[in-house]
Image (cartoon, rainbow, N blue to C red; front, side, top):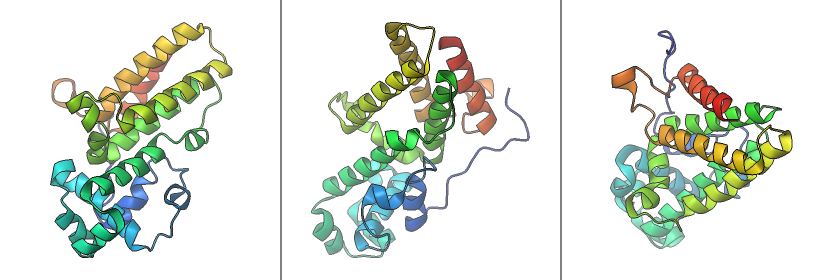
Length: 228
């Protein structure tokens, strides 16, 4: 049961620069300059930040070029100049945020020595990111869940990430065979991905909100302890 005194975490106010800095810190060890490879005061970054802000506020379909331009403080011509189209801009946003969320170099900086400790830390971190930025999270999974596109960017990034995770856990030592470990990691990831996409699904029926840090920790820890 979740603590009555623990409050759910809130994401940052929807200001363009704050959002782009926040999304680049879903993993707190991430470097914004390394991810974007550009100065943080460029027009291009302002547009990316505004696009992230609009996706969070209005959803993927509601993030129009006009809304993005207004939030970025630029005209429509600037978006066309830097990105040519909304599709190219959204693709850039998805690449940037996915590279951050599933960046294995950043994952390696998370705490945990044993396989269980590492697995708990990693999935707690991913679930926290889903709670902090639900709009971007839903946008990442849009092609997969709506169109069944298994060639989408999320599938490609996730596939590399989950293989790296299984390799890492196996090297740290476990009583499971490699085949058993892969199955366990798959079970944990499926459960956590559902929680990432719908963290408040069981709030009304069971009183569980995975945006509460304590509840989130108990959920992930219980999964890992049972399966690894």
